[in-house]
Image (cartoon, rainbow, N blue to C red; front, side, top):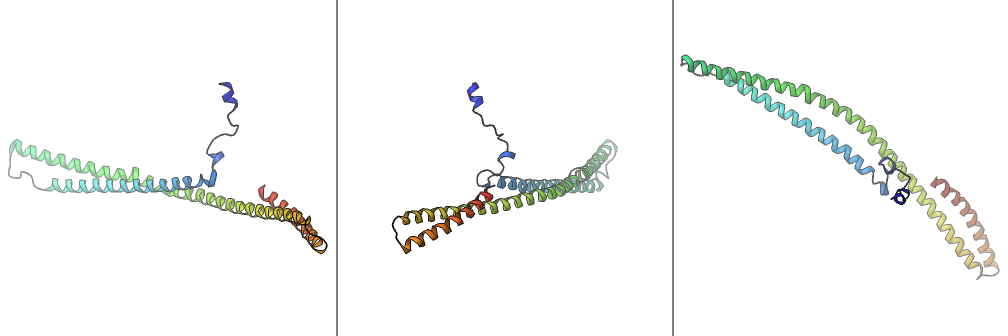
Amino acid sequence: MPAAVADTPSISLSFANNFWGKDDAGVLPMLERMHDAKSTCDELRSFYSTRAAIEDEYARKLLALCRKPLGAHESGTLRSSLDTVRGETEVIGKTHSAIASQMKTELEEPLAAFAGGMKERRKIVQNGIEKLLKIKMQQTHAVNKSRDRYEQDCLRIKGYLAQGHMVMGQEERKNKAKLEKTQIQLASNSSEYEAAIK
């Protein structure tokens, strides 16, 4: 067991330390998650709004129902029972109306405020990530371009060195001049490549 503990990497395997990952794999899930959270918030707001509207409509219908005459021609305990039914229906209607108001004030409005704040925070984070991704892509492109120039110069130098053994006279001098020029260019491209890597 102790040997396995010693073999573990010293770098923490947290999301923060591996955000960009291979092919910037950490960026897309982060942006998708922020978009999905916005969609969920919108769906929840719509749900609360619809539910409050249903409660309100049900309350209005119950209150309208309790205003209609019920057993107006009856007397005694039947009339008393029918009046109780109307009264209870009115109480239920008022309760549903209170529930609709409560849903609007305690759920719908705070969620709308939260969604507005979340939208602003999401924009800040998303814009920051997109800017960093753009900079990273530009730097990667610059490194690749510098590396390609460096590798091309190395290949040219190898070619001139190989050619140097096969040519004589005027061609040999031209070859040496090209070799020296390419070596100077290689030194410049090498320093550019090293600077781009840092």
